[in-house]
Length: 68
Image 1 (tube, rainbow, N blue to C red):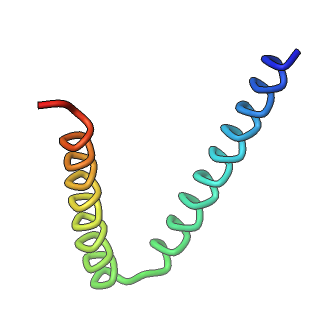
Image 2: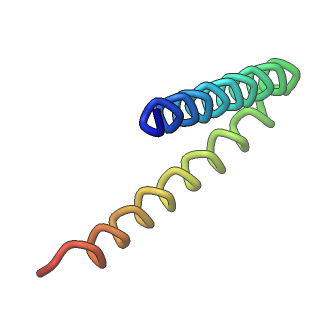
Image 3: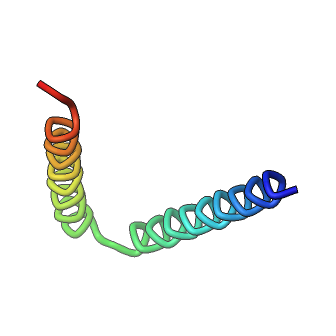
């Protein structure tokens, strides 16, 4: 019974996370459509830098986690 409750709770969290991600993507798309070309280039540049920082952070975390 406890295992079933954990699965239900896990499924609910996954559903909520998916819904939040979908809402964020929709909001970003609406914002993107309202921007002019110059603003879009600035946003794309900032997003690329953010992704690069995120990947670097993940690499650092993996290096710290993995034994040498």
